[in-house]
Length: 192
Image (cartoon, rainbow, N blue to C red):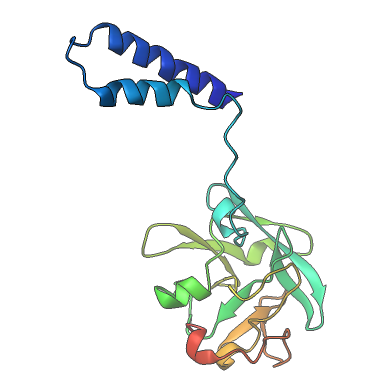
């Protein structure tokens, strides 16, 4: 419906512009007008859905809820959609050390932190990243997604490079090596 209004407005503008044009207007102008007038009156197809990204993109504009979920590794931290959250051994405090290629593979959970079910609100916080965005922290450590997790409950980032770990509700990294089907992912491409 909106496309019809846009097409109609363009036709009207083109018609008005044609009224003031000189007599020597080229054939290109006439062809452009006929193309606009011949535009289909049906709405244009909507672009295909983008591949789903971790909730960090949507959370960046608002609250980033952290919850607790059960997994094969025990109770772990997840976001509001059930996507697993990880900590990085190289982060020794609330400041992230994961940027560039690392950040592409381990996107930060961004936004203002909100405690969901089972989360100790006193352990939840935020820190500022180099680009000025806010990253959620838990027990004083930044939390991240793993790009290799495709669905809620995936733990494919567990033990990657022996430096990435899921987090328990107590704020401690769970260092059991067992992870998802891809837990033994090639660490050269993991960007840790």
